[in-house]
Image (tube, rainbow, N blue to C red; front, side):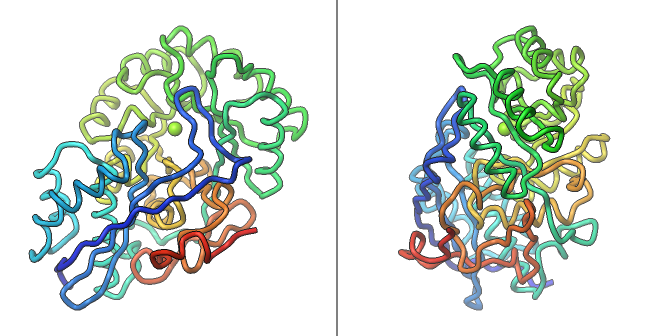
Length: 378
Ligand SMILES: [Mg+2]
């Protein structure tokens, strides 16, 4: 294997507005635009690799601007000019340089994986997978916490796009979740798989259990993060008191949090993605650890664009911790953004993302200044 020889790191900030009719509203925040960061790492031979930082302050405490400062001021100086045998070695240097900043670290680590695989003439799946990559991954899409008419519009649009798993954002004050979910069942029948994500809206285990019991009659395949992110023992209490599988999302960013959640037996399914977990490398490790503990994994997201999703799709496609035919992954950029961030947008067919197979993560970001012009989607 050729080593990694980063010689230059460039960043740029890109704005991606959501389609106005698809804005995601949760009890905690409204996601109507994505001010993200693209990282490009160039090696000694002039090859490049790319990564995306899906930064939102509400989620990880990072902004595109803080990630830019961290990467340029703290990360680039400790990587550029050095030689690494594996991206893992470079990420260890970043972890030793700064606490936290998972999305900034992930953008660099993902770019290094892209570069390393390109330098060695392979797709990342060949270096990071434990199974032949699947060709397609079913995606799940978020239905924001809106009233019944708008909920119906969104659910119908996703259904018409071929998406078969819906994620209802729940727990918003003044929104009747039972009513809106009943309306979607009435309209679409038993076809859609229903999941809910409260983003920690329920303040106590009792509140969460009561809400889940109210919604269970509509057929819940899983319940995501019902209780606040820092209360893993509360999540475990909910799990002991409901029959629906529990997915942990905000509660597990790090390996130590995963170990705590396993000790508490707090979840059934782990939401994983490189940004949240502080790197593609860490996401791989967490997936392997969860699988060894008998847990399933699914890709979560902070609404990464096609660029970030290419790495996420590679991770899920090529690792057996992800039963993608049974649990849909959050790879919904195509239905939320009007334009792609790539020269060739990810292909979306029958509600599934086709996993890129080219060198690196198999995708090329649009050049600076063209993000809103090329790759247009109708
Ligand atoms: Mg979530």
